[in-house]
Image (cartoon, rainbow, N blue to C red; front, side, top):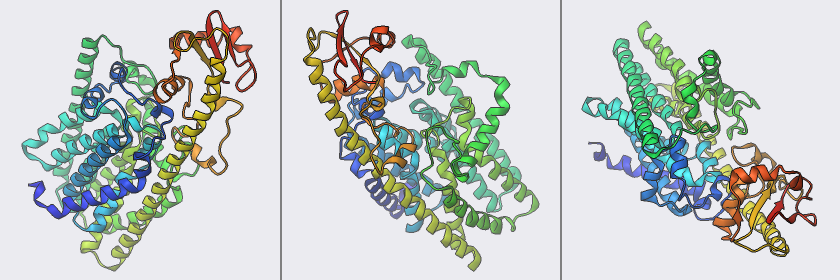
Length: 506
């Protein structure tokens, strides 16, 4: 039974809590709502999330609640990450405190979760649960027996929450198969298991597609064609397959190892590529030492698995036809996990050269964690300051609006033109410039874009502002009358036009 190893469970729980509190404690016990996190209440979002293919999120909200409470999100996130760490430790037989501490630190502080905590807090625990289901599916498959038949169900659950964590299952199974190869399993056996693993993932994708189609049919929704939706999957551009394949393979390599590569739009890596190069060296040394003991067939199988690890971590980019963001790259953490596993194995059995490389790798993995944790807290401080700035700016804006003749709060339709980050009062705080390079953090106010104006004013300030419909607002914002208005904070940025209050921010 997996619960029999109580010390392993305790270590996984302890280190997950330590790193979670260290990296996100400030975030979990502060407001700091900004960007997408300005959507403090998720009630009314069920249909939209279903159209994006995330139809299980509203089901999960029935348990967690649709109101975004940072401490509750933090509790659920920490629990799901603990379970994920525990499953991986079980799968690879990790018992040493140093190994479990490093594994937990890497999983908890990966940059996808770092930017999620700063900007996408309403979904941070959703991401962690999606990760847990993906890892659980991989764990059940690699454990073998009848339990393996359940793996597609958990892959389906992961996809129904958020589609970007299925590559974690693929990467984990590739690492498990690589370990079997290094342990002397016959290449034919490993290859057969690998084929079954692919079929298991495909079965999960098929189940997801069938249920998603049923959800759309029952709800009357259409699949969203937004950049983060799944509507475009119905019109796959087969002529671009070579480009999609190239992107799937090259994006992780460029992102991890090439400075200033721009591999992922609007997101710079939290970890220096030079540190990744330094980490790659002991990893290759340890892999070579283990591989030279294998026969030719075993070496060929190991080489195949190593080559498959890169696209395995990133095949979601192929499915999404080249689209990628800082929220879809969590599986890249398994590059670090692979080095950790090699180091752990070397310290158990190998002589001095391998042990020295393993110690060096562990120190470098500590540096990875030590880069992620401070940056996580810095991003949260930035969000806190932006929330204060937004309160100051909108206090002035609402005061001017209420002084505009003819405006009745809660009754007069309001058209907001532009957004505060593009206004003349916006500036990047001195010393914070580098933080703006990361996913979702480039804005300088909590109301980061047009749609967030309504979220902030209604959900955070609780202001009685009667906004016109989004489609109408876009059309009215482009009208000659709106474009002729001065921008905030100039006099006249609030005007009554045709019975509606226009507020031009930028």
